[in-house]
Length: 325
Image (cartoon, rainbow, N blue to C red; front, side, top):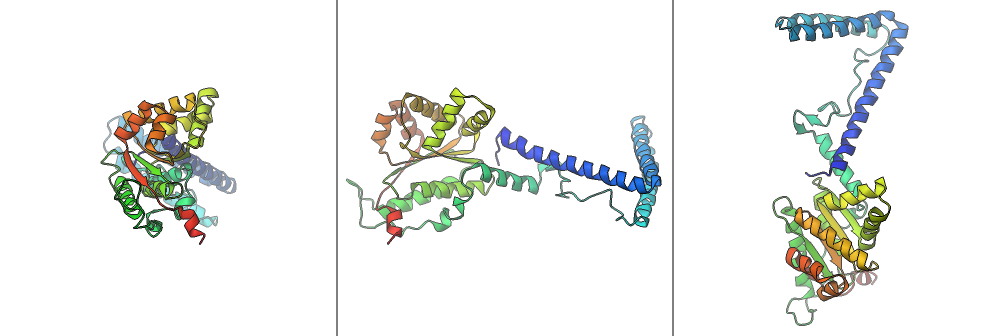
């Protein structure tokens, strides 16, 4: 599982917040109990003194300090628990439960990330993907070939609409399955409403469920973010900008619907080139034909896409229209 530095820091801050909240709760409970019984405060001070003494003696080389101090601390703790119970508190009142007892709200068990950290990663990347709600419906389980005809062919091709869709679905599945071992990019191009965006969502669902960072932007949203970084350079824009380059998978939907100009062309090249150089995968969907990409953007962008992307052509009747009948 790969997280950007920003995402990792955000998760670790949540663990720090939990630890701070627990420490404040313990301090509040100790103050409350000490107000009722000053003897409790004295026992706490004794436990603390004994613990410090044990560490000091161990540092001074007194190997027998551990056993003796442990016995003393255990006896003091038992007296404290008895006193708490006598006051009507639970014996473990000064030890409130952790949100995750396995890692004690640190996110790690030894050097290994805890299961709660893995779940937090999945939750975060889903929230930041811009896709969290739509993927409940748009995933491989709901992809259907029934909207693609066996007797409809692209001009000059012997491949039917259904065969092309079946091939695209198979390649997208493999892309997701081999994501951690095989570097690839995908261009989904063809007619309007034939499942290009749907298939990119299918891939996103598979990767998000395994904790990979996936960011989805329409082409217009992407270029807006790039412009915000170039011209505003505020903190929020910088974070979005970094995620564009650092996320495991960037999905650019509906390329060609933005207002194309010299700025978008140059920024598009930078985005593609940087991600290719750092072997970060990208999926692009577009209604444009390959030659349209070359003429609207540039030959070098066309060269990057045709040489570094798996080209998947979808065509047929608009699925949205078919669903209305």
